Image (cartoon, rainbow, N blue to C red; front, top):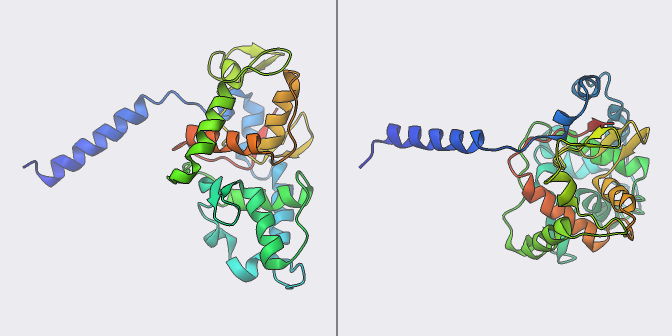
Length: 254
């Protein structure tokens, strides 16, 4: 039998070879150095303003239950560590995949007995950013849940499907033409590691769904409503596509 030390060495070498063959690159590698520096430095990163708002909301009691997020979950720096890396996840209440924002609203409705936060609202983006920050630097770890497989498969098909008047797919830009230029910007590989993200173009924060809807509008396709099934399916697929890559949220992009 192979000695334990040798087995461990073989496993380490195998892992290193897999990592060495990984050609995936974060979107941060496709932006200019000044924007990279803005993301790296929390004192310059404008997204931290939303994080501050999210932290305040975490502590604030709401709804008929007069309960705060902290009242159930305690210190987010401990309880939320790694949580954002595991979303979207399968939800047994709805029997469907939920993204992080939907989970926040589910908690508000069911536990705080409060109104759900509006999609893309400053409050929802703030608390998502605050939760996501606790997983920064951790690897994307989509759940190995077979109940998510149908959503992953639908998302993968949508990623490859040509849509809109321009008849383009996500894959044509982010797989076939990554690194090329489009409208003065470099096309990234399309890894969703930095969301919620502060975009200089928006002068504000936005979710991954906002970005997906922008792309759909850009190819002149019909744009689904926030939290539509196809958008959540795409999020599930992108999480699987990004498995093992390090989270950067809240990020900064042009």
